Each structure stands twice: as structure tokens, then as C-alpha cells.
Length: 96
Image (cartoon, rainbow, N blue to C red; front, side, top):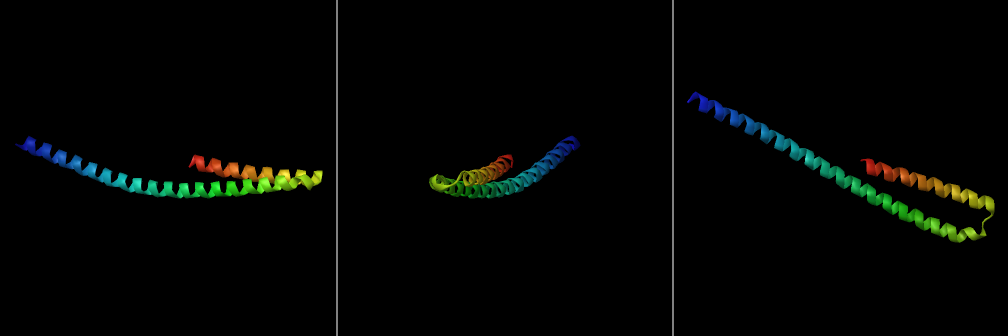
């Protein structure tokens, strides 16, 4: 009889541990969901920035025909700088 009581207590103890783990995992899951939503919002913001910069690049390329060579080089350097910044932002998003 004592052996049965011991098994019941052991099962109850294990059940309590499982319930605690379950609650902890639920909390962790909620925080991960919130983090995922935040990352998706950031990703969307970065895509909007990319689209804006692409439009500016296109407009600059159209107006580029009347620029001097030094102005063209300067513009290309600025554009390359912006593209590198965008790549950095995207790589940060992918690592998180």
C-alpha cells in the first residue's frame, strides 16, 4: 500500500513539474510571438525604405543625363552608401 502511495505522489510531482514547464513555455511562446511581430514590422519598414530609395535612385538616374562626371561619381558614391546601409539593415533582420 505504501508503494502505491509512493507511486501516486511521484506521479503528482511529475505532473506538477510538467504543468510548470507548460506555463513557462506558454510565456516564452507569447514573448516570441511579440518579438516576431516587431521584427515583421521592422522588416516592412525596411522594405518601404528600400522602395523609396529605389524610386529616388530611378529618379536620379533619369536626371543623371545632365550631370557632370564629378557629379555622377558623387551621386554613385551616395547611392552605393545607401545600398550598403540597406544591406546592413537586412542582414540584421535575418540574424534576429
